[in-house]
Image (tube, rainbow, N blue to C red; front, side, top):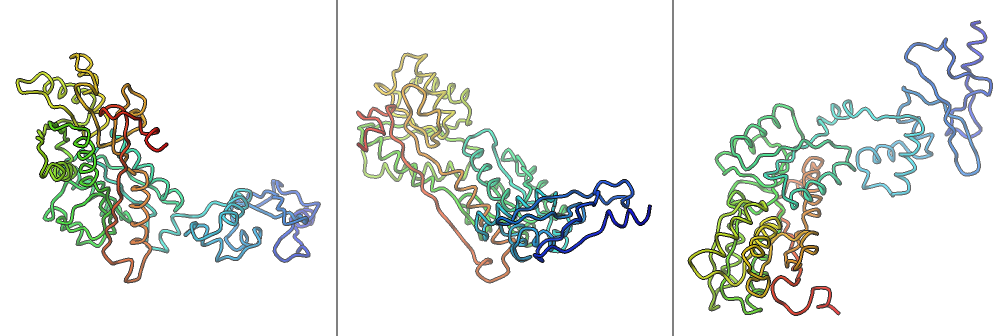
Length: 398
């Protein structure tokens, strides 16, 4: 019996040294195999030649490299820096890993590198589309990096945000993306002093962050206000979500900058970024004692939808008596009637950028990776019918 077992588990070397081949009469699922050693026969094709590789739970990175016909360094790059490997090579290596049932030991890898392969993403409002797109962008990068993301919904609550930051420290999370932070410099100082890599999504130079990326909301508001003024709208209302105070401040600054030297007036109203709150604000503004505005700019698309419904219920036609626009364009803005003019925010791209900047800090060990960075993305004006322009956006570029 022992001789038969020895024969069944014998190995021979193929003519090509890259492969270890099982003998034809081997029986891989023999019950006499040592406990915990499960074997499979995997057929690996290399050109026109074929070989059979013993695969199983104890395959190491060197055996995977032999099976794939690449170097160990290439396997390491596929696992640690996939963006540095040609797509076809990466796909080939991953397919060999899958065929061989090879699963990298990420925990051990993390211990070797002093990392947990986890980052935290602090988001103030997961209901708004701009933040959903940002999350999607972050996930795109982290998935390629084989990192996990812990989502922390802060609701713009400073106390809750501080609790999450303490969790980041105690769990040894590798880095943090603030999207954005509601804390001031004094509140952030203890966390930032720990040297945990972090990136701030939003323009906040006073809080102590050295790495930031953001959409230029001030410029977007400036351009949208200029567009409304060019259409002859001199009385404007602005809905702002005061919970997002940094963005709100920049947006109001941009609107007022566009009004300089113009014979026009701007009124600012606090409003949460929901359809219901937009509807309620629309009712108050359009039915108020003062003369209703000729144009209204909503911070979010949800606010704009609520105002559009309020205008319809009150018999105020858009755009004949009220021009309507939003600073956060969405796919729904093009579907409602009339289609709503808006500023298209590159939020998905912003999320990808923030994640890449964070990984530069996590993985970098040179002076360049530690240098302060600030990257600005510009929104795009999407002109539609709701402001009274004669042509639809798709006709403007004919």
